[in-house]
Image (cartoon, rainbow, N blue to C red; front, side):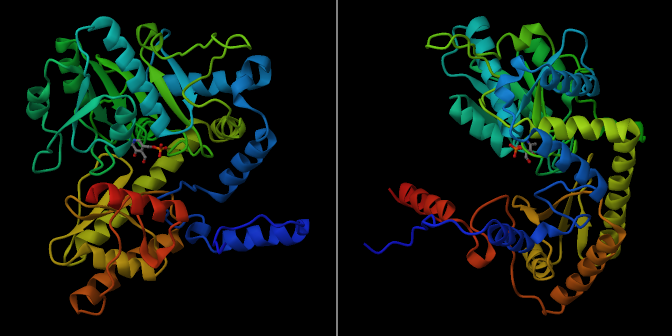
Amino acid sequence: MVTDRYAMPVIGESYEKVLQQVKDLKAQMTQGQRGKLASTTFQGHEEMAQLTHEAFNEFMEWNGLFTFQEAAAAKMEDEVLDICISLMQGDEDSSANLTSGGTESNFNAFHAMRKWARETKPSISQPEVVAPYSTHSTVHKTCQYLDIKVVTVAQNPDLSCDMSGLEAAIGENTIGIVGSAPNWPYGQVDPIAEMGALALSKDLWLHVDACVGGYILPHFRKLGVNFPDFDFSVPGVRSISADLHKYGYAPKPCSTVLWRSRDEYRYHYMPITEWACGLYLSQGFVGSRTLGPVAGIWALMHYWGEQGYLRNAQRILDVKNAIISQCAAIEGLQTWPTDGPLLMIASDQFDIQLLVGGMEERGWRLLGVTSPPAIHLTLDVMEQEYLSRFLEDLQELSEDIQNGKVTKEGLLSYGGVGAGNTAPKWLLKAVEVLNERSAQ
Ligand SMILES: Cc1ncc(COP(=O)(O)O)c(C=O)c1O
C-alpha cells in the first residue's frame, strides 16, 4: 500500500546527528530572534530566558500530579500561587490553582460556575452566560464542552463593551457574566466594576478572563497607567483566569485560575474515589504535567522581583508608545486605543492584509483581527534594533502599498491554514472534515 505516513526509523541515528537535526529545525522557525516581536510567544530578555529554561530543565521530568509527596514542589507551587493571589488583590479566603493555559483556566472557571448554578439555581437546565462579542474563542470552546450557551452582545461603535446590551441579554437561563482584562480582539479592559454590580444585583457569577492582562496590568497600574479595575478588588468578581505563560513570562504551559473565596473554589475540585487506587485529586482538568514551568516561574519571580516586572512593563509601554507615534505619522495607518499590552493597527486607506503580506515577506509573522480588519500585536520587550526595523518596515510598506508595489495579501487570523501551506497534516484534515460537515 502506498502511504505518505511517516515511519519511525528501524535503526536509531546517532545522538549528535539527531540533535543537529533538532537544531536545524529550530533554526527554521520564524521567531528565532529574541527581542524581535513574536505575537505567538513571549520571549522577554535573553538572560531571563536562560534562567527560566535552566530551572525548567531541573524539574522537567517531575510530575506535578504528585506534588503532595514532595515538600519542595509544594513550596514552589504555594509560593507562586500566593504571589498570584496578591497580584489579583485576593484576601485570606482567596485561592488559586495552576493550570496548563488560559483555555484550561477558563474551562475550570466555567465548570465551577455551572456546578454552583446547579446547586443554587436548580430550575435552570440549559445554562447560559452573557459576554461581549470581544470574548475570547476559548470561552466559546470551553462553554461548548460544558454545554453552556454563550450569548454574545455586539460591541459599541468604539469597540467598547455595550453594558446596556449586556444587561438586556440576561434571561431566565443566565448563570454568569464574562468580562475580559483586556479582551484579545480590541485590547480593552471591560467595565468589570459595572459587570460586578450587575452580577451581584442578579445573583450571577462574574468570571474575568485576564489571561492576557493578569500579570502585567498590576505593573502598568503602578507605572501610572489608567484602566478599569478588574480583579478581586471589584465586588462581584468570583473567578479570574490569568496566564503566567503570557506576561508572567513563565515557560509554557502555565496559567492560573483564581477564586475569590471558599464559596467559589468548593465547586472546582473533582475528587475521584470510585476506582482502585484511592483518592485522585488534581489542581485542574489536566492530570500529569511537568513541574518545569512551575520551577521556571518560581525562579523568575525571585530573580526579577517586583522591580524586574516593573522594568519589563515600562519597556513594553515604551514599545507601545513608539509604535503608536509611528502609525500616527504614517499616512493611512491608525492604532486603536487599548488599555494594556495589545495594540491593533488598521487602515482607512488600504487593505491591511497587504501590510500583513508585506511584513511577512520581511520576516514578521503577525496575527490579525477580522471584524473590523486590523493587525494584532502582542507587544513584548523589543530590542531597539528590531523596534527600529519594525517601524521602518511599517512606513516603507505603507508607502509601497499606496504606490501599488505590494500585492500579496497576508492572513488576518488567529489560526487556520496559513500562507505557504506550512500547516501540519492534522490541520489540513481538520479543515477537510469541517468543510464536509458544513456541506452536509
Ligand atoms: C483573553 C484570552 N483568554 C484565553 C486565552 C487562551 O489561552 P491559552 O492559549 O493559553 O489556552 C487567550 C490566548 O491568547 C486570551 O487572549
